[in-house]
Image (cartoon, rainbow, N blue to C red; front, side, top):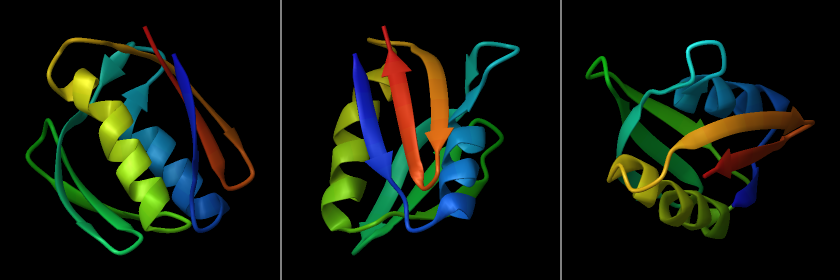
Length: 93
């Protein structure tokens, strides 16, 4: 299953892709969605850190949160990310 998430800009897209999935180790770092504030998404990672990502709008933030929830609950696994401009395509199995 794939979902395209539109970020505020290219920098935010690169940040999102690098924070949620590391391709070489096939590891997912995200452990939770802490908060959605308008278009800002605050996520927690395995190292207990929290990071803010700015998306295009609130609907993109909610779409990402909905899509990633099954990964957080270990029901699905992320298998890839691809960045095109300010868009991140996330693939899960």
